[in-house]
Figure 1: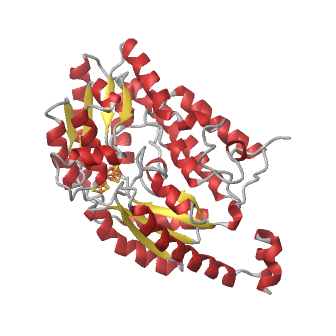
Figure 2: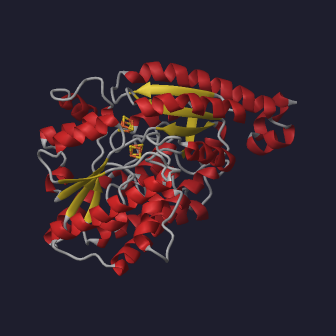
Figure 3: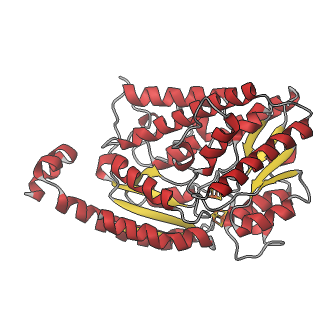
Amino acid sequence: MKSSVRSKCQCAKSTRSTRKLSPLAWFNDMVSHAYEYAVQAKQDGRRIVGTMCEYTPRELILAAGAVPVCLCGGSYEMSCAAERVLPVNLCPLIKSTYGFSLEKKNPFLEMADLLVAETTCDGKKKMYELLAKRHKMQVLELPQKPDDKDAFIHWVSEINKLKARLESEFGIKITDNDLRSAVRQMNAERALKRELYSLMKSDNPPLTGHDVLVMSNNLIACMPEYHAKCREIIALAKETPCRLKNNDKTRVLLTGVPVPHGAEAVLDIIEDNGAVVVCQENCSGLKPVMEDVVEGGDVIKAIAKKYYHLPCSVMTPNDDRFRLLERLVHDYRPDCIVDLVWRTCITYDVESAQVKELSGRLGLPFLKIEADYSPSDQARLSVRLKALFETATGRKRLSLTPAVAKRLWPGKQAQLQ
Ligand code: SF4
Ligand code: SF4
């Protein structure tokens, strides 16, 4: 008998302890696969380019024949190490990324020929100055008024400067055809990720939010094996019945800050308390893959446009984030919204009031959780999440008609009549 995607990786009591089993196992070893790929690429004469933000246009790096590697840190240990130099009161993502450099513990960073950074939040910008003492870096100045035409013209000129830097640094010429080919590769990767996320629209999602996060954090863009493994998971999920009982769980839409590789425990805190994260709106989720680069026309402008549309909280105003949230609520039908803010992230913290207001308008219970990467956050967050899920479940039951209840929870129909 065929088994579902997740049930192959699952025993009755624990989902996390069996994640090493096939077919999700490949994704759990993402760091090793990415490392082997990067080492081989280096041996083949390709350059490694480190990225630290979703505003970085991977297409330019691929068109330069180089390998784009995400360097965002999700390690608590490295975040603590960085406090020797950086303020304690700084976002853990920034501290951890820098801590890896201080400790020389990120092999991708150590082998990088160039880093690409953007002027997003203040903490990142200032950390980049320290990082640039050890690593070659190109900083793109990101204008922060998304509706301003002059701002977009400036962004296009910054993208052109990156192209020129890659050409001079690596002694190459990037043609429009190189860029168009890279656009096709990246559009294909974004389409795969959208399809992967779409599996979670089901009434009984075949994966956990943790699984989807691990699968979407691919570290290196456009590894052919990664695309093949995503296709395998998607096909398996479509052709086999789901044996999970995710339809009993509270459906969560997670928004806010990105969850980099190594910081996945925050998803476990949510999911270990009776919920399933059906949708992640953040930069480690759907936000960067919702829009493709339009093919045809001026390719540099098309790339610039796609990235400039990313609704990060550093933008002002950032209305597109709220339009995106509404659309995702419609598509993924969450029972509540959880807004994750890494401690001291001012922009997402301030924007949280608007997320709360939107949740109220949509009739969804809302919770903002603040955390860093510390394991000590777990007990405090669990209590608050449990309370949220009880409220969300109660509201769901109250609003159910017997017909809908019969479809979702056949055994519980009598309770609702
Ligand atoms: S949240 Fe903003 S700063 Fe962070 S990765 Fe996304 S776009 Fe970049
Ligand atoms: S989470 Fe906030 S403070 Fe941290 S890097 Fe992203 S935007 Fe900056």
